[in-house]
Image 1 (spheres, helix red, strand yellow):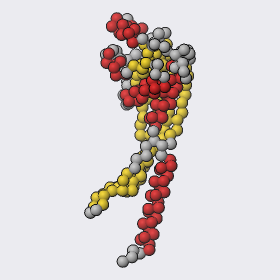
Image 2 (cartoon, one colour; image 1 turned 45 degrees about the vertical axis):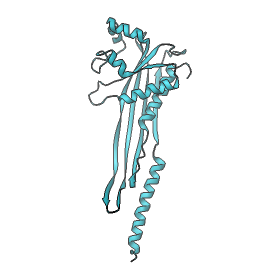
Image 3 (cartoon, one colour; image 1 turned 135 degrees about the horizontal axis):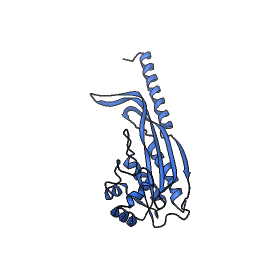
Image 4 (cartoon, helix red, strand yellow; image 1 turned 180 degrees about the vertical axis):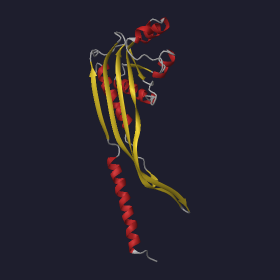
Length: 232
């Protein structure tokens, strides 16, 4: 028995509507807006030579922590851009100098380094590390508004999901560069990125994730690399 034309037209209309949403998601997915601000001075025009740099996340705020994997991403970006730059591992650095770089005891101003250097074990370890720059990164990535709906079900001979969802993501980070030798701040670089992710589903959900945090890492990493490297 043939279905009524009105029922068939309705189903075709619904399918066409969802197909349009999926195509739009495929076109728009992955688009990220990025804004970078930089204010630096006393750049090491010849690079940092055999010295090292450590990148640390600020985690003293009550409502968020700078992600460890984001700090690792920045370090990897700098080292891959210039393998001659030695970037110290954040967790190893914090553990070696416990408790002086825990969130509650970490120095908030460059001049506080002088107090740390009055502790012989700390001063000796800094000398062994050949530490030239300390970079503090403060910020995080959050998901913002979400819309849409999705339903999943299972039945005889069929299982799947049907629907469409979308959500926004925002990243905002600021890097503060300390010259460890002169105990002064020599620059700030910030990156703010935002994007929209999509989850269309016709039987199988297909996540289309905007690389918001990754773009922030690349943007911030590029600026720090330009500051530290003699080859950029």
